[in-house]
Amino acid sequence: MNVLITGGASGLGLATAEAVEKEGWKALVVDVREPDQRFEHVTADLADRGEAERAVRELAERAGGLDAVVTAAGIDACGRLEDVPADDWERVIRVNLLGTASVVRAALPYLKHTRGKVVTCASTLGLRPLSDASAYSASKFGVVGFTRGLAIETRGEIGVTLLIPGGMRTGFFDGRPDQYKPGPEAGLNDPADVAQAIVFALRQPAGCEVRELVVCPSTETSWP
Image 1 (tube, rainbow, N blue to C red):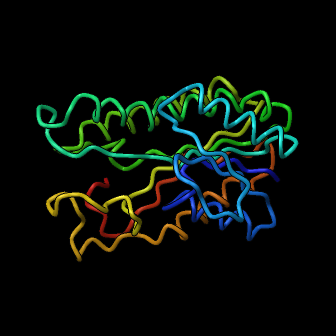
Image 2: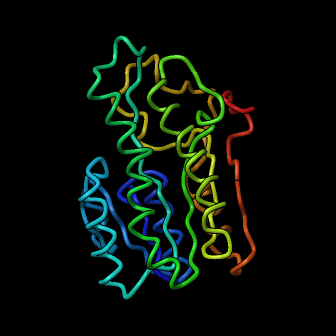
């Protein structure tokens, strides 16, 4: 099975690529940075629709098609709306929401051919917003709506799963001011454990839909 993974150079994307390889499947990685060289990959900025589409087509053609897509790429720009530069705020939307849509759109012809699957990655902040996270929440609320709409549009053609993860122990929080970093009591999840939920969704036979999965630490403050 050929599985295209965005954001596969780090965090949940890397954990998913590793989990996919353990299953004996082929991980195809798209990231703005070079991933581990053992993965077939294309570098692309998902904020650029042309780059996103090119990366999907190139990897699909190299691999001889696609059986699944996992959209794990994501960025943030913390702060109050008036304090975050507009370009930074809008880039979050372009990468997290529009990048997700661009990748899925480009992958659809391949996925319909194989009756494949899509797993999109939203966030608990896509269901319950927090202060100083308007860009991230807006993008992830958008991913929730996009994925639910996609599932309706493509029913009977491909499988669609919405993953809603809580906080994970990744580099996602690196470089932030301390006020925007999880405290030591946060009890974040290991991304490898969340990746297993993705594998579970991908393992389902055609016609059996895992529509939505919420995976978060038991002490998650942004859920419910």
